[in-house]
Image 1 (tube, rainbow, N blue to C red):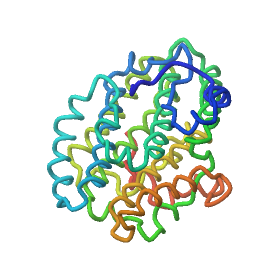
Image 2: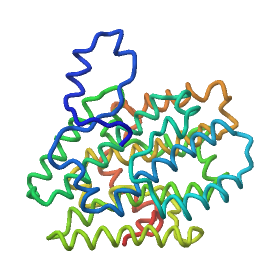
Image 3: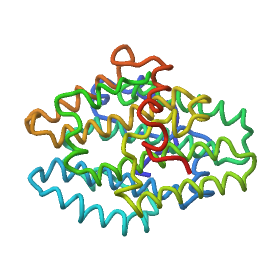
Length: 324
């Protein structure tokens, strides 16, 4: 998975590295654990979709940055048709090297690309923990909290675990440009995010391996129903973890807030790349400024109660993808 290595102690590694070398970004690394790769082994039909999602995000950012004058139909029709009719149906067996798919975007803001990668690693390792049938529920909870600590210890890449206000996504001069210009592709991105969130619930709430397997299959099937009828079934608003995965949110509120922040930031980067208000020469700096705000847990935050209520105030599960 993008040359990820099973080594631990990112914080210790950074502290032991000479300052001159620290100026070069490190690739995200998996925390060590016997649970690693369990999700792929037990739920390959869901796990491999993540590889396709990585490609979808990467090709989107590459097109938005490299070909800003492209007509909207290229993404809305040609690329959308390729992703939904081909790539998602036959997802890559291995992780996508996003710097190869999106080299120009990677050069524009490698920090953003690695920030996304680091949060995606947390997603996947939590799936691995839930998929490991050797672990008790208590052991799984403990492992997920340790993984969250491990994630947050990489201060250069970690998003805050404090839920950010929606004003950052919807109240900026550049906000909502992407979803207005590319509504169908935006819906596909939100469907990706819905699936990533929804997978937690059956793995957390089911009583045995067979029930977990059936629950994951139901989530994946619901995703395919969205793809089959995008104009009516795609989420109308950004999926939020407290609504789609309430049990996961109650068990692991820090990780849940990180993932909502991650999905907001994905939308923000798309808006910045598309927005005519942000000059091309300033897009990298504007993305960097957004990253700074999402890594700062001391500003632009909601209370936990407001965060958990917001999804219902936005229309509940029916507006953000529904529940399988």
